[in-house]
Length: 332
Image 1 (cartoon, helix red, strand yellow):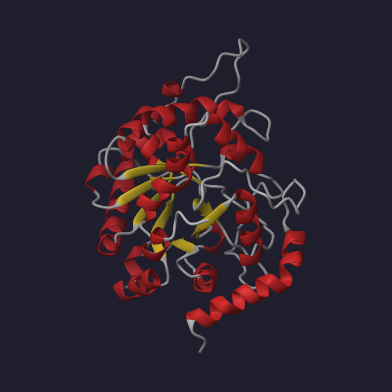
Image 2 (cartoon, rainbow, N blue to C red):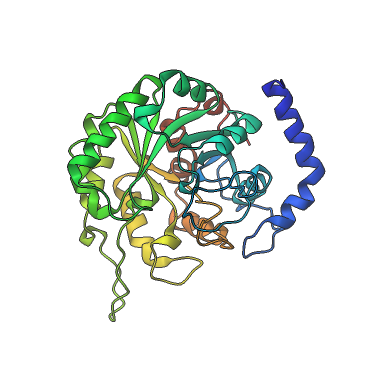
């Protein structure tokens, strides 16, 4: 059986050999050979949300949407384009509780390059299994209450979060929650008492209205659940991902500027609780290139280097707490 070090060596050699093929397979809307990141990206930047997918080797669960193949090679190319040297791989909903592909990818990359967030049945997963995953770089579990339709009643949500928090607390893992912003008030009372770090996906998934005739900018505080999310971010255990604006926006891409007021208010009120994430490969939106929006996000920091470092590196370091990765996070 190959050692982790040997697997990493093979990965590097294979990457060097097949990098041209990998670049050709990138399905972004921009020139696939445009590998140069925005020069304003901080050294050691993190991408806190991306997926690997391989329907040929790892078929999805029945009823899943169709998707292409996006492997570790493709992720390496995209992260180079974004300017991120650290990534957090998230178990996609199409694989349910089968984390095999994610775990295999973590083994290949090693914890200096990638950490992971898994999905599991808390009633049927042993502490030994969690410990094994932890040793391989898993740092969280995802609860997806959004992709499958309406969220359960608030009490059921709170009870579910508590069960998972109890399971992951010994490992200091993160509880990652994908939930509609309108449902956040129902879970707000429980989150400060979970005893684990919590990260909310995709800006809290607000329901963005269509632009009004006057052209007036959106008031984020008019969004149901926004103030509730802000109160959570003011505490000491909650973060939110600045990501997936194309899933939320009513404005045309690639900049999705109707989300700017939300992002700017978060910059103002909770700069230490925001983490950048690409949401690559943009499932259900395949072919999208998020790099122009990433540059727009840098524009929104208005030259505030401290804010930029927080958004792209420092907050992620604190959130994910990645041992070796943390020690090397600021390196180019």
